[in-house]
Length: 592
Image (cartoon, one colour):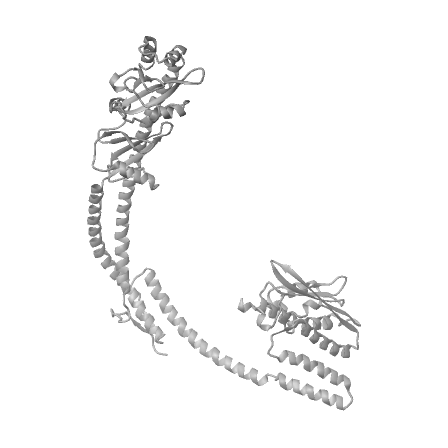
């Protein structure tokens, strides 16, 4: 044996390595250092932007809700005033006769509207659409058409107040929004209309304090036509984009051109409130933050590259030594030994490499010795092996010699034994159950000559089972055990072979029971034979072989179980899957 050589790997680059471990290590260090910083900054910017946008949108929605409440409250008060005004019988009578300049009617209208006159102009119209009374300038309230427009709608919706954008037929264009409710007498007839009109001044009074000077506020009707606009004007066509989003079923709310847009409906009155507010987190601010992020990323990359380069060099050195050592072992040099360069896990890996090289060398030497011994053993076994074909031919010769000399029993024994041997040496691993039962029949004929008919073997296998395929020689050894061991201390008995097919978990299972009424078997022997440990089956080679054949072909869920037969004797149950068809259809454990 050559003396082991201890060496330290030199720094040699291999042409086969496209990307060295050191470069990969350096890249990992740089990536693991820079990427978390970049991702953290991006996450910080985006989360901050999202949080600000979320808070801003929530505040925007709250302001829209306040505006909605203002309008709803105002319209509810107007509707209440209209109801109180129409309750007076005298007023209804005046309205039926289209009486003008009635002080009582005017005073009633003036008193009821005293708290809302800064928010609406109240007027009373006849059924023909003529203005009879008003709290505002008479020039602002002229005749309204009753065949179309808001009066027509109020006529069909007499139980509710109708709110519409003012259609400027002949009235002053200072009126932007009008609400009308029909006045109905005791005969359920419309005798006039109660009207509350709102111009720019009135709407400003309603919305006072609800938005800032930097915001833009829109009031739309149900057809998304602008009713009122307030705030800073911009060049964007908000109305066009709003309609586009609405009719394409896109989200109207949300950010838009560095602005936060919120919209809500005043559902009972067919109006929409749209509030546009400038974004705090603008694109310029975001761009500036990302520029700072890029600068930080570059500086971090430079710093991490310098530090990682030095660290990767130190970590690469012991790996390089191990790589060169492995190459020498692969070439067959098991005497190579490495010198550890560190006391950490890489140093332990070097020690383990040295132990591995020594173990491989010892193992290879042991393998050579074992192979030499195995070859010698196989040679001896081949020399001592009997040729089953020679035995079969010899039995055939004995049969013909027995017939020639008039010895029928010798001929029967040799014929039946020859048939059993023929099956045992055939290449078929699986045979039909009926052929397996014929082997039992041949065996029974041999034993009947020996025991002079003191026992009976009865076949109770159903006919539909006999066409199923089973491994050969799985029933005959069990029957042989029953005859030899069951009837050894008796004058004879009966062996019954029965079977059935059961279904378990949607699978068909074949159960073959072999029972005898012999001397039985001890509980200790039953426990040993049913144990999965093959060492406990020594001395019962037939039972052991059958169990192994079934387990190897079908798995451990099938096999052989032995127990007592009532009232006396032994019962052996063989379980196998139901296999119909040729040997090609037999599924073995190795094929599953």
